[in-house]
Amino acid sequence: MCYYGQMAATNYVDSRCKTAVNRVYGMPFKWSLNPYRGCVHACHYCYARETHTYLGLNADKDFESQIFVKSNVAEVLDHELSRPGWSGESIAIGTATDAYQAAEKRFRLTRGCLEVISKHKQQFSVVTKSPLIVRDLDLIADIAMHAQVRIYFTVTTIDEALSDKIEPSAAPPVIRLKALETFAAAGITCGVMMAPIMPGLNDRQDQIDAVAEAAAAAGAATFWAGPLRLAPPVRNHFYAFIEREFPTLLPWYLRRMEGQHLPERVRERIEERAGNARVRYGLSLAERRTPPEPPPVRVLPAQLAIPLPELDAPRDIPLRYDPLSA
Image (cartoon, rainbow, N blue to C red; front, side, top):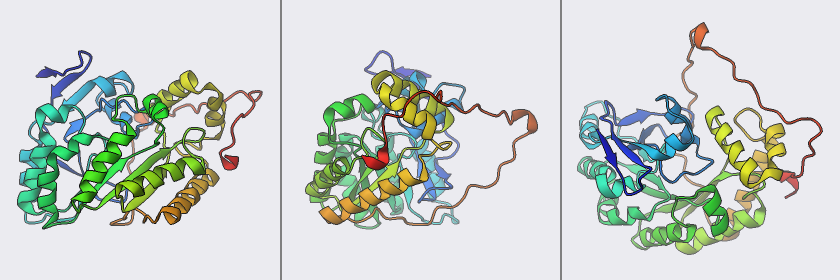
């Protein structure tokens, strides 16, 4: 069944799920919950774009316009949390989609999941860019009386012009911070995740300081900055965006990315600058509830192990940007 949202180009596709809570490896949380798949925010850096390719769709327009609605997710979640063997560990909501994107206004799946979470007094966290989460403040505050709750807002920049380019359909940063302020005033522990940090776009110390300062002013308790990561399908999309909007940065990315990751020295510099900002504005590092676990070894059949070519820049293209000197 296919629904049509307010934007003519967005299709909402009913997709009943078999599981609601999914085991996660290599992240600072063990369990994730995503009521939707795909995201209309259309952030060009989003690592979750890769997930649409698992369905035979692309990581470009399909990810932004083909939104899968897990219509039975609350029912399945209730069943899973009712199991005697359920550990009760915190569930991270919105790790591969924004659980409060525009679809939530209509389908209210995230609200339904929170009602189940309230029933089970289950601890959880949410990561979002949407002020729609304020709609559920009453329910979230009630859950916080019985279980640990953490609300995180992603704020990559406070420069609205830059935000409009890199995350074109997300709420403006000032609106996200206003929503954070509302939650903090209600006594809910909140944090800001400045992620990803992208060399040449938002990695300078003054840019990181500006987000941390705004986070502290809004009442955030924690601040974390994470480096850009580009899985192959996301990398192709991101490079096309950089070539179109910031062409002088493209040679640096083509030469310096180490597989999916920024160079180690750049990642260390990002961590150092984020640490400086936390000290300057009295913020803590976002909690890491459990140490990341490596994913289980997965052996692909030989016929599926197709090597992906590495993109590179011609040697005669000069590097115009050095993030270590920014």
